[in-house]
Amino acid sequence: MSNTNRRVFIMQLAAGSSVLAATAASAQAKIEENDAQATAVGYKHDTTKVDAKKFPKHDKAQKCNNCQLYQGKATDAWGGCPLFGAKQVAGNGWCSAYAKKA
Image (tube, rainbow, N blue to C red; front, side, top):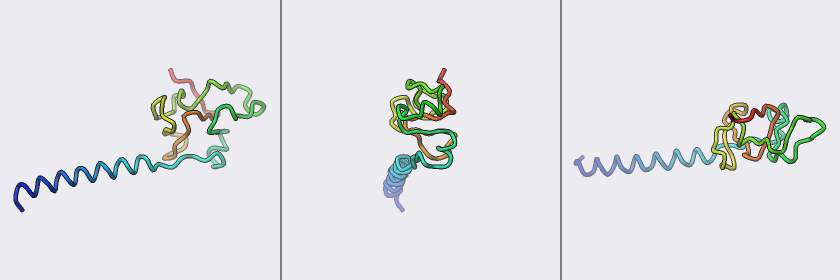
């Protein structure tokens, strides 16, 4: 194999790997509200839909995207949360494990 062919092969390999990594990240599963883990902590995709009687300390300003556990940017629609493993939560979501970001 000539040096030129090796370079082309390595560049194609790097480009292909980048595409695969981006595809895998965007395909990450989103948590469903009826998931057993989500139900256990009262998770809702929309903080305004939380049952005030069941969670009296809930405040509509509390959202996943301003929680210490949220692993996305504050502007991300969905992001990771260690409570739900590999599944993502909605940025506007809420659960009873909410802890205000410092």
